Each structure stands twice: as C-alpha cells, then as structure tokens.
Image (cartoon, rainbow, N blue to C red):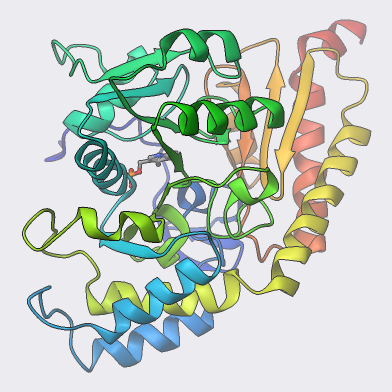
Length: 388
Ligand SMILES: *Cc1c(COP(=O)(O)O)cnc(C)c1O
C-alpha cells in the first residue's frame, strides 16, 4: 500500500545517504550517481561548503516573506547577473515557475500573446509550461491546451521564419534539449533565432533550468553561442538540492514587473538563497568550469573509444558534463542493469542514455563508470551479441 500518487515511475531503490558522487541505498548498496538528482546536485551530494553555509543559516532565520528587504537575494542576484547578460532577477522555487515568470514578463512587456517553443522541448508541468512543452506525453488526458503556444521543429530556420509575426511575444528554447534527448542546437540556428526576434520585437527566452549552473562548462549554456537572450531561466542546480529557481532578465526589462505584478511566497527564501549563494561561489569559478569542460572531453573520448565497435550506437552528444548516448534500440532495459552494476543513469526519450554526473566527479570515478557502462552496453547491444 502506498499513500502516494502513482505519477512517477519510481525505481526500486531508496537513497538514504550521499557524499560527492557516491550514494548509498537503504540496503547499504553503494552507487556512482550519474543522475545528480536529474541535474540538481551539480556539486555532488552534501557539498561541505553548501552544507556549512545552510547549517549556519538554519539557526538564524528560515523565512521572512518578500514584504521585507533581502540582502541574501541581492547577493545571489548579483552573482547571477555578473555571470550572465542579465540585469534583474526574480526568485521562485522551481524550473516551471521560472518559465511561468518568463512567459508572463514577455507577454506584459510586448503586449502580445503568442509564444513559440520547439518540438521535444521540456519546460515544466504547470498548466502554462505543460502547454509550452513540445512533447505530447506530458499533455495526455489534460484536455485542451492553452492556445498561446506554437511548437516548431528544432533547428528549422524556415519554420520559424514562417511562424514568427507581429503577434509573437517570445521564442523560448533550450540550447541543449535535456529531457527531449540531449539535442544540441545548431549554432547558426540560434543566431538566426535571435535576429528574427530582434526584427519582430520578440523576446528570446532561454530555458537554462537543466543546462545552467556550470553543467556545460560555462555558467549558462547559451554562453557557448553567439546569442544574447533577453530572459534566462534557472532552477535545478541553483541550490545544489535545496529547492530554488530564478528568472534573470536584461536590465531593460526591469520596469515590466512593478509591485504586485508577480510574486511567490517562498521565492528567494533565506535558506534557499544561502544554498544558492554557496553553490554559485563554486560553480561559477572559472577554474572549476575549465575542469568541467576537461572532464567532459575526457569522458567523451573514453566513451567513444570503448564503444567504437557497438554498431547500434548512433551518436554521443555532449557539452561539458551533459551527455546523451543515442542508440538505435530502446535503452530502458539498460538502466536496471546499470543500477545492478552500481551506476545510476538516466534516459532522455526512448533511445538516449543520459549521463549527468556531478561536476565535481573525479577522473577515477569517471573511469569506474566508463568501464561499467561500456561493459553493460557491449554485452547488451544486439549487434555485438549476434557477433558472438
Ligand atoms: C526540469 C526542467 C524544467 C522543470 O523544472 P521543475 O523544477 O521540475 O519545475 C523546465 N525546463 C527544463 C529544461 C528542465 O530540464
């Protein structure tokens, strides 16, 4: 008997402790965690710097309300804007809420209502962000969707040229689609998107909920490309496991949200801001980010080498430590085998094995994981088993 809704396909494992890349379940089995709580614990579990800061704050004050000034919010907002092109920040509690704020800001600023998003995107599960998401599976059974959103094929310039018009408030996209299959935007496409937005007085929203906070080897993934989004949304890794989200907008949009226009009871809560501040002190450090990039390149080379004879491997896509291994076959059967072997990994769509290790992962941990992943993929791939 369970008292919980059955809305998650849960694995038969309960994690009770975590330190860095390692987690332990209730039976005492140890795993290498290449999920990071789905891109959340980017600094690894219980990072000492974040634990220390939040523990101190726990004994000071937990919650005040946004009726009061907050130097903690100022501190985090200063970091988020210093390491991006933004100038003003709104704090909330999740990725979906950050996207809701972005959509509302774009509509209020432009006075227009259409928002263009892309197929295979994921923007959240609220009533608005569910409609924004370009995947039918999140919408099944929920009736008529909001008409605000139009979904176009990703990386398709012609489709966007045809759709974008005087009624469009915003184009919203992930520069790497996380849930949709670790699909990486074509750099030329992104530049055209931005140009079209400028021509039509449309705001460009980049959803960095999964790609941000150092995941790709930059503070935000858009920084790898020649674009300057009007709005960036963040959550997942922002508090390293403490729930928090943020919408970061360019300075020019500062006036759009005046008193009473938008809000959140818990948004920017002192505990969340303390966790975020401590997280960003590490995650936005240039040396740290360079290491993320180097570890990503190392993981890519080693996986490519180990898996070169696996004929049902279609591609390995990555940026920093965000990886998608696409296969011709469905990868769902691989995940429990990997767990058995002590590796926690994710899927992204039916054919993509997604790896999101903590950014603090060591080379030794990468090596152990690569060995197990390669062995599991090779023994279970149809092509190589038929050769035996
Ligand atoms: C996870 C995710 C969201 C939703 O975040 P929640 O915190 O679950 O609301 C939105 N966009 C992207 C790209 C995500 O990966």
